[in-house]
Structure formats: structure tokens, C-alpha cells
Amino acid sequence: MILIDGKKAAAELREELKKEVAELKNKHNKVPGLTVILIGELAPSKIYVKNKEKSAIEVGLKSEIIRYPETVEEKTVLEKIDELNNDDAVSGILVQLPLPKHIDKQKVIEAISPGKDVDGFHPMNVGNLSSGYDSSVPCTPLGCYLLIKKIEPNLSGKKAVVVGRSNLNGKPMTQLLLKENCTVTITHSKTDDLKGECLKGDIIVAAVGIPELVKGNWVKKDAIVIDVGINKTEKGIVGDVDFDEVSKVAKALTPVPGGVGPMTIACLLKNTIECFKRSQKN
Ligand code: GUN
Image (tube, rainbow, N blue to C red; front, side):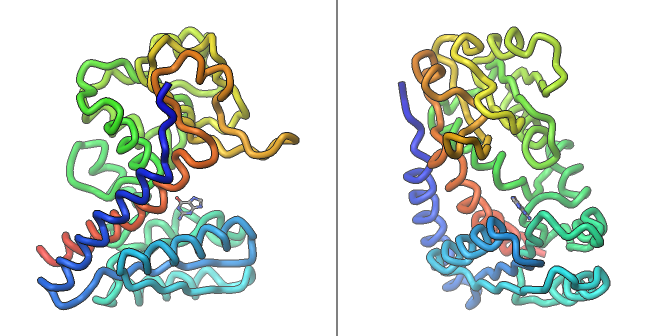
């Protein structure tokens, strides 16, 4: 069984991006900039944002974090996004989720200029991705996609089963696999005979948020299994895949942690660089 090393893949991607940033700096005399807006004091959000900044600086990007208290007015955030949309030094804008209840998430997402939407959450990017056009692609499914391609460069005709239908993961993952000519089944927590559906997959991407849902006898021999889950349980953090069972059946499997997670941040840096390059073309 191949244990897919997301830490190593992310480090390799960051090395490539570092070289690319150096080349862009030579060519344009400036570097891509990522601005993250962090609202409130949620510990996981603060950790993610710190890690994003560290990685951004490592590859040579300009990085800025704008912090607001939990009580900040929606209007203040929208005005700041407008200012960043019009700032040439800012290539990418990310508003860390989740947001406090009094702030309308969709309004915030739609306020970000699609060309600076490094999360790929803006409806324009969602639409472009589903139409097969150039767009920002959400970082986690992009990371999963790159890991799958490392194991199996030619996905044409493969049966892929995506477990989970979120806007963040399941839906964009489906689009990426479709673009590669996979036959994709989207399943979710209400799917009838989820086990039977999973058993058809040459590739399974589990992003449903149910601890260790995908069992060994749900997986076809030699399938590639990508585990997006991060679930807190009594025995610690586990994924959506039963690692011990599935590792005996799968050809390749991502661990949790150390699989998809590290790739997500590396893909955010990649998206920031892509936004910069598109802005230079226009
Ligand atoms: N919070 C957890 N994951 C994400 C993400 O991918 N993007 C944003 N903006 N917030 C998050």
C-alpha cells in the first residue's frame, strides 16, 4: 500500500512555487501578495491563518493578516474588501471561515473580486469551474486532485466516488474529476447503499465529516482513497476513512493528519500566484 505523504508533496509544491515567485519577481519587479482577513478569536482559525502566513513568506509571497474583533460590523469588513479589491499590491484575498453569525457569509464571498478569490468560492469561479473554464479552484479539492494525479496520472475512464456534496469539497472535487474524464458518482450521508456505491470506485474521495465512515469492506481492491475528514473523537483526530481497515485493501491512501491538510495551504499559495499571473495578463 502506498501511504500518500501529503507533507512531502506539499513541500515539493512549495519548492516549485518558490522558484516561480522568484521568476515572477524578475519579470514584473513585484511579487504576488496574499491578504487574509481573520475575524474573532477561534483557536483553529488563528492556527490556520498563522500557518498560511508562514508558508506564504517561505515561498516569497507578500503576506498580510487583517484582524478584526468578533463584534466587527459587516459593513466594515465589506468596505475593507472593496479597498483590497482596488489595491494592486493585493493579488489574493481570503476571509477565514467560519464567520460570526451577524455577518452574512455569502455577501462577504461575493464582495471579493473573482480575480482575487483565492478560495474559489465566488459564484463566478464556481460557475467557471463547472463550465470547464479557467478559474480559481477551492484549495482542498485542488490538493486532493494533485495527490491523486501523482499516483495515477491518467484518470480517463476511471470510476470516482465522491462522498460528501459540500460547496467547499465535494462539488468542486467532482468538477475536477469530471474534467479528467472520470465517471463520477456524488454520494452523501443520505445516499442509499453508500457501501455499494463506494465499492464501485477506482478512486474514493471521502469528505463527509463522519468519523471512520468508509470501512475496509466498502473499498475495491487497489482503489485510491483520499481522506479529507478531520474529526475530533475520544481517540484523537481521525478522518472519514477507517485507516487500519482500508490500508489493507487500497492501493494508496492518505493519512490523517499528514495527507490532504498540508496540500491545502500549498494550494492556497498556488492560487495566489495564479491570480497574480492572470492580473498581469489583463
Ligand atoms: N476555514 C477552514 N477552511 C477554510 C478555507 O479553505 N477557506 C477559508 N476561507 N476559510 C476556511
